[in-house]
Image (tube, rainbow over all chains, first blue to last red; front, side, top):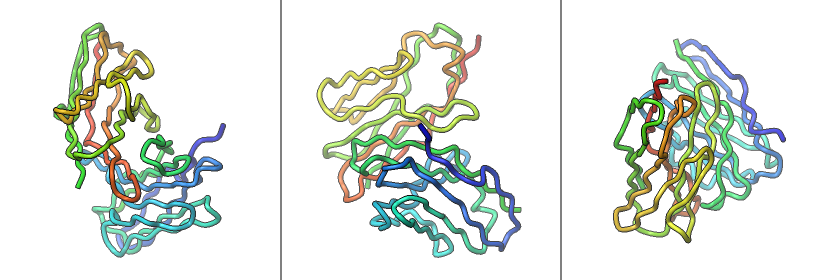
Length: 115
Length: 114
């Protein structure tokens, strides 16, 4: 079946511009997560959605980062006024119900490069 | 706050060598433990998981991991590696909190030489 889909796969943007990253989770998965993967930093948690609500936004690095989820499905991560330190691979994952023992299914990520 | 430590950042082995990757976590309560693998050019995928019961868990491709509660460890092992095991390996934990978010270690890059 279809896995987690992310678009675009690559994005190059100029410093100061806004970017939107999209995630289509596995159908029927209620939980959706955004992570950031930087060289040598591992995977950094950004935000978690259960349905359309975000009970945990604790990982968003600054107020330039925001995310929303609509219809309990698609999610968009928006970065405003991008900075070079925002360059990373942004990963989306979904799980069936968000319980601690529900494995996460990851997309291929969006590689963001800020020049 | 929870944290996960992976001690080996880069491991190079020859084919048929045995593998053990270390993982320690900080949370003292009930935990769920995972190993994920990222093969070159591919997305992260689940290798194995531990929730409860037998502390020795077996995963795909001959991998296993042992949960040792007293040591807060969940080391990954494979008796004989293959070139195709070349990948980055991430240990992760959930436990406590309202959202059960998965906390990852920084990863171990394994290179297996033929």
